[in-house]
Image 1 (cartoon, each protein chain N blue to C red):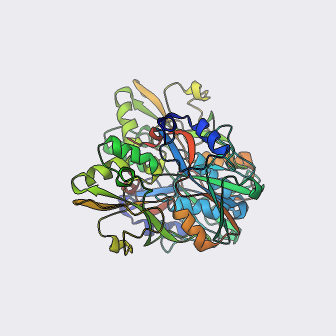
Image 2: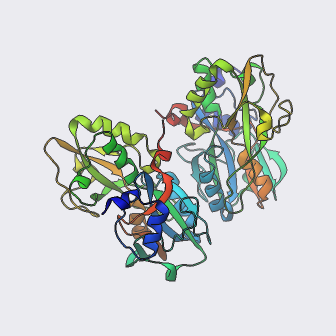
Length: 262
Length: 262
């Protein structure tokens, strides 16, 4: 992508996606938070919000659009049905298709949940001199289903999904310290080291995203991941669910720094 | 109260309240978190949980009991209908009565929300050498409705309610620092100084609790208060709501320290 995407305002980025640009959002609108999307019919909304409340590390809620609400201070003047570059539609827990616009599927009873994304703390890692392998290697972050269950809430349940970043052994403490300051965007790691201990048999075969090379002297470090809600949807099989396509996030008007705690 | 209440286990305290002891819970089970209660029919549950999500300072959710659930890890083996010393029942937003046991009003569709309480950070204030006037004066903390609106969620709306503690001017920075480490129990103050600026006309006439004397050189400091949900219920008028009576909290098995952040 060009330098101009880094400097694009969130409103301009959303306008481009609304007009049909359908690309991953890495590198758009530096310094602004990006968000995962999960849209569900109202009948599932309490169970899902409770699922998020009980699983704050994978599902940190940044905002909720109520039935009939299409924008908020996270996307002022925007339209949640068109402003993300690519969406996924699930029916009864099965992926039914990917679309650049989901207006045709919209219903008056849909509730939109906007969930924090680790892109926010990756900027802080880089600013602190900690390498982020998948960015260096030009790939999407690798994500894995684990043997760690989430806390069930009503009908929602499923495995914790994690993202993995290989970190030099001497910088693991710093990576923990830096990311623990961002509890609203997954926070501190959930696991450091041995993948088998959390049910991951092969780091080279991620369930989502791309595998990355693990340089000598680096240890795999695992963070709770915002794809966890999509895994729960596949287990729980609501009649309809609409999500962002992996890597194709909502670019919000919130600053990354807004989610940093002392 | 006797020393023994300070050293009583949370389970023993809840058993005493279940057997009919109906006293305020200040001074019970030192080091364990106490919680506000709000019970609502399922049809109001999404709106209320969203109200809490949008107003985390007055409504920090510690746990939710789903329909049919009467206990959790916050009250293992307990019964939310009997384990609080005194309850308030609201019908259509009006206080209908106070009861030591609400089993007779219980329905299968009720959801119980357990909300953080500032008793947790008062221990930390005292441990840091910061005086807490209402404890020294043997009174309940004074609470006031303000002119600050909460963020509306569905049908729920109403004024922010605050608690007030007079703090010596030289210790205000410390009081902010100490309480900001407890975001799950109201966190840092919402206002320091002039009561009129937030719509409080007379500190001597609190809306809930007792007035306290403000010693020379002390500044009134205001924290978001867990009575805010009861004020929202009075505005929103759900058909039924059950809450704790002010000062008569749920004594939980969670440690105060569990809610401290770095």
